[in-house]
Image: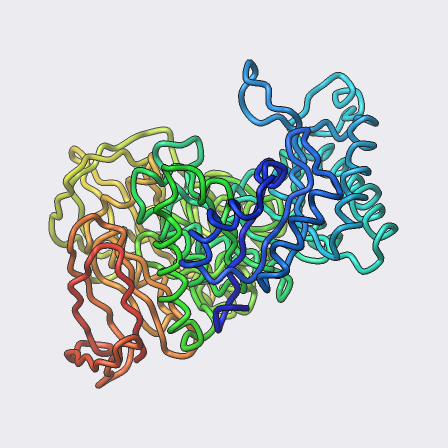
Length: 569
């Protein structure tokens, strides 16, 4: 590692490598990266889109980097020749014998050249050719593709690689669209057992102007999820420049949050874009500064902590909702197994994949836990949920831009808070005096609960209504957001009060990071849940004093956009 606490690496596509004919000229271009980023490792691609590098050319490329003291690994992107008429990605058909033989040749070459290689995140299938339709039979597409890719991984990729080079280590990079893996054959449950290591796609880019709906918090959240999927075998986080030319900070966001998630390595995609593409040649100095900044305080941060979330393998629903909640300042820690020991648990519709979910929830509640469930999960569970609380979601919609909170556990409503935007909520049906409304929105001669509560055994069950447009959660007034945060953050030593799009990252050694994604200066408060607390800015060592409040000590911040406030209390 050339940084003290993590490694910086670079992915080099095969097209960039086969184009190198003059290594002196290439060295001059590569200097743009070297003078800004301490690159410790490069992943050198042998195949992509029908192009395979020669053994001789790759040997020259390897020697170039080794002489610079940079470690080398291989890379493979399993896609076909791009078809501009068809568009989309040109995925391989893994039912094809032709593809199987081609990949055997690619894996053989790569394993001869390297002792380690990574599969780029095109290792999935969306093929519905006649051969795949026949092979699928009566199985669902998810079942068929999971079986197909498991077999291909074991009997083509790993088998060939180990036969050619018994020392080889093979890494699978999982992409950022974790909600949808199973339908394209990515198997987050089995593939980490098949491959030696995994890698995490932390790309967030732009959540509005792309087909992906990925709030910035995902760059952190997915690192934490995959760390819990494969403890000690998650090699790092990978992000790229795409859809970031409109705003250089959006590129830097990916780097910061990848490392806030305690990534061991941050991989940049890719060589050609960063040294040749005029849209991105200003990016290396910026990301180099990100790495230098974080390296100064990385070791001072403990292990990340947050509200326990449950995303079972192959679960889906309320797409990427956790990240919208994370963007509202709630620190989250996701697990692929039910977090039975947690004292506060946050469950979205994904959790319905677990057929034993209700019984697990009952056990947690009997042990005194707080469980917060979303409207999507309640709707998905249907009548099954009624054994916990008789709450259902109707087809009725309420248009809301005025809100209320209850200061006495739902007995009375207090206040009328106005939002700048009208949002649409789905009206729940519940029984009066059995479930209590803690926060809600006003309709016309009615109101719509946003946060409801009831007791079950020794625990408490909360139901959180999510707007039809998930991003509209950002338009809940601060008092509504603060109510939600206080419930979810009951076991977290600190809690945020303020606008949405201010994020909070918490660690187990009394450290935290505040970062605002708002485009303007904003005010926020941190309440440390202990008396007479004092904050120390880890970067400049300045002491910050707070004011006593009920339940702890309050600290007020005037937050600049995209600036990290790294604190210890």
